[in-house]
Length: 470
Ligand code: HEC
Ligand code: HEC
Image 1: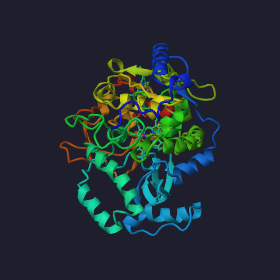
Image 2: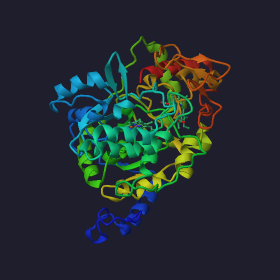
Image 3: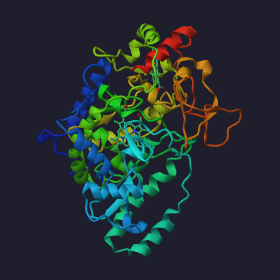
Image 4: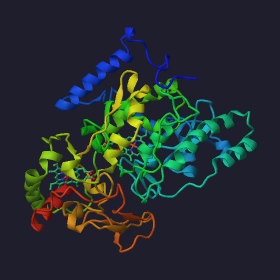
């Protein structure tokens, strides 16, 4: 039996100056100090000298999810080569948000990628960086995992290497798939996927037969909208609740929790994430594609600087972003997501005591009882708004009386609303199932952030025009 939190191969001894128990204490004190004084860059090793083009290539073709379903099990032919031309041809079958790669066993597998969530596919083309708010995570997957395993075992043969690959991916899927069902379509359970996959991992990331962290099934699945990646370069702390601190590459590779087998594999992937970090830092917000009333936007800029700048910063060549986390008591948007990671989940503690937190350079999850006031570059493109995506457009973000209580949107054929700035929706009286955003549910409320309510109609109109220019 392995000891849950002390695997000798994972933690170098303190005498080597590594991150053993002794320096864990020092780390804690250091982070405590920084979080109190809120100074210094809490994300470390930013782009680390990486190459952006190579970073994108790795995300689009690479093996960072580490495990997946063998192509043989799906009855698909295997690529003859792993050059990009062959892989591009393959993407025509599986779509641009899935990667085909050789796993650690040398078996060709397919799995989702970062772009399953961090891109929009328009006319078959990938637009990376923007979160995908149209994916439906609300459907319960009714797969009988044991039955599926038995079928594949028979098909591939239990002693085959392909079956081994299938099995390694299957045992994590079996753990997380039943636990990630959102109550409303369009919201994303990313951190819950991690939490549920981590539940069956030792701190050295190897598989544990027994769950090592408890997940309370009586609580709603914590879900969120997806922030655009082009703002990450301005942030000192990642994620809506600011919990991401420390080594940037480790924070970025967390999706690998789904398939990485051990710290040896983790470290290989981590090395390639210097390039991924550089790619993310190179992203620019998209420009508003319609006409802007420049005069009105100029007026709006003044109002914005008066009302919004202290939290959201200023823009343009001399722009400054203050990197503020606003306490729940002040921001008053739905508290559930922040509270879940702060007080109801064991995942942040697991993370900090795993390879991610204890090997150098360390990454730490430090959940806050509040939300990051995000940069608003390209904010026109990232509807719906607030961490839980509870507000369909910017006009309603600026005026809480316009926020619909129950609303439906067409996730298959979304249409853009350039007047109210966001996605078109239909206000309804009775919920129609999970396609309805039901703000009465726990975690889904559209309350709070009422900073625009006290302004005049004229002032809000001007600020809205200004927001289009960012
Ligand atoms: C299953 C969907 C999903 C996948 C796959 C996924 N992400 Fe995310 N990502 C999210 C969601 C949802 C959030 C917001 C979570 C939060 O802030 O609490 C997020 C947040 C982030 C952030 C922080 C953004 C910010 O402004 O704070 C970064 C950076 C990021 N993801 C990068 C990646 C990379 C790189 C990959 C692939 C290795 C990846 N993500 C895979 C859904 C996903
Ligand atoms: C006291 C700080 C504070 C002030 C003042 C403030 N905001 Fe915010 N804003 C926040 C925080 C924090 C969030 C994130 C809330 C959440 O996700 O629940 C936010 C979110 C937003 C969002 C949604 C961003 C997204 O991508 O989801 C918009 C738009 C926005 N603010 C615009 C404004 C405008 C315009 C003003 C001025 C009228 C303003 N804010 C004033 C703190 C503030």
